[in-house]
Image (cartoon, rainbow, N blue to C red):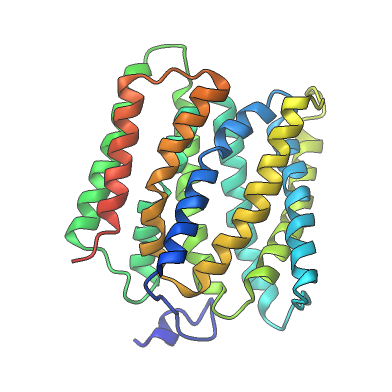
Length: 306
């Protein structure tokens, strides 16, 4: 089976997977650091808005930035024949990932949410092994998965019987990480034939009515308010993450190897724990830090090349 045949259901051409350059490595590390503040900002935002309402406002802000930048760059945003069905698939994955992330973060701490959501690179490696030519799982990738899951277990174990956090919340965030890994691979395939900016604009547009409807159905009795801290958190989630980070990540994913890029995101759990400690007062326990380190090592091993 050639490259075109193996990915023909998602993209009309072969998959480009070049090695990242020095500038791309620096940009990837910057994105990883910024993404570390996402779970803490969600935790702050949930003090003002329920999960689905928070997602709706966040991605409205993101859509303004992504759409504005696309128009500035004069990127055609009209859908071409055959694109709607593929973008709908990506939108469903995106919606499920955000629902599970926001809901899971609501029931657990920001530090734990940051660690568990950023286990997604080894899910990326598994899905890439299945669908992207040249991204096969090796011994070191398999070992990395085991090490990373060990970090998750070490982090969860001390609190299994306590009321400090919810194991259900932890599990939901892990599921979100699985959806995120799937989203990375599907995005990698789709941007081979759909411009990254058009792809972003449309899956944000298609997802917003779903968040609004879910909020209307399930969150009508929940408190809605906007504090100064909540506004700052929304601007961070919408402007920095859903705006700048989404644009940069989707653009570099078009050209460079997914499994080589995600290795740099081992910095995200560590920076997220630091953000949580600085802004939310989450305690930096030895098991939390040890779990973060093991997840980081596992992600490195998952993406190691011979």
